[in-house]
Image 1 (cartoon, rainbow, N blue to C red):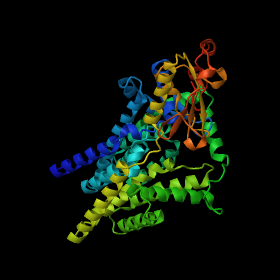
Image 2 (cartoon, rainbow, N blue to C red; image 1 turned 120 degrees about the vertical axis):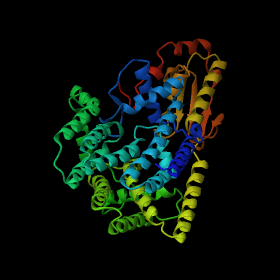
Image 3 (tube, helix red, strand yellow; image 1 turned 45 degrees about the vertical axis):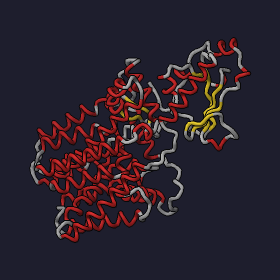
Image 4 (spheres, rainbow, N blue to C red; image 1 turned 135 degrees about the vertical axis):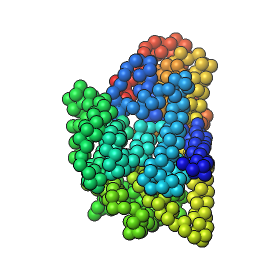
Length: 491
């Protein structure tokens, strides 16, 4: 790596870190998934339960692997079990993904394209906010970058490293997103294009690595009569309701293409001033040009077409209703294409001027979006402030326990229980007749609130209704916050 390249890469990595760490506390979304993760980590650390699974996914009977939860443990320990510490895991992984993008694209093409791709990855507001998510699906793009590298190694006849890396990554899919499995056959394409005799030793080591990294899933399935495999089959074959806004003739394909287009334009700008389909078309034209001019060879052309095509075909043909994050694995291909296109469009002074202008606009629009991101004011900060206030008020009135009710839509009553736990609060259901504090979201659902915390509202108990003896009797039982079942959580 040349001196200038090192300096530019270092600046890109610093920028990547700053955009991911900026306002991390206020931007930290603490909802049901993060609440569940906290209880899972508490189960491991406090209960001593070495888990094979994490939370149940949106598909009944299918769980996500526990790797991401184990990775968060050091941050919980360092922050005295405060979930805010886990945000730094995502920040670190995001910066590492920025470097990984440079490394992999540089190996496949050249350092110039590598720097451009890392720059795009570091600044893109879409990627920044994906990297800031504290969720098991967060490392999907990082996985995709290294999966691309494993295909490169196999194609370059470096079978030992290639198959071992491939096996390692495929074994991690359960811990990230099962949809990544659709990319697993691409290794066959890489092998066929390598035009060499198969190295059986390398393949065997790759399979061994696959068995090692997927051993938690295999062990869980043996223990539970292959329940997840059955659930996956059921999920893929059970028709779901159509998503609003999709066309009648080809509802799933239409929905998929909406999301693909949205992701494609999101890489470059989160501002909606260009039609997403125009950006996708421009990327396709750039890709065709790179193939025609032989800047991208037949192997990579085949890989990229199959990579994107497998996503589109899979989610168009099965019964799943896809969400945006299902398509995060496609982003690395778009970044690769635009990095190659930009590196080639740099031959004359006029071309460089155009690139500098476009690069400046790219930085301004994306950095501005990150710095001025308008949160919905119901994240970690607001919830923690609200819970702390409830504790202070209940202590002021000498309540040994309280109960919580919610005035909100289904789902928005979740994401509080771990915060009650770390503040050592005894919280019951209102049926217990403990003093009732009511959390409201949004404020418009009620005529009045007593105190607001961002977009969250709080209504105090009717203090005059409660006397000391009745409150003590209502608090004599178990702490419902610790004993009541939790949606998506299992031990």
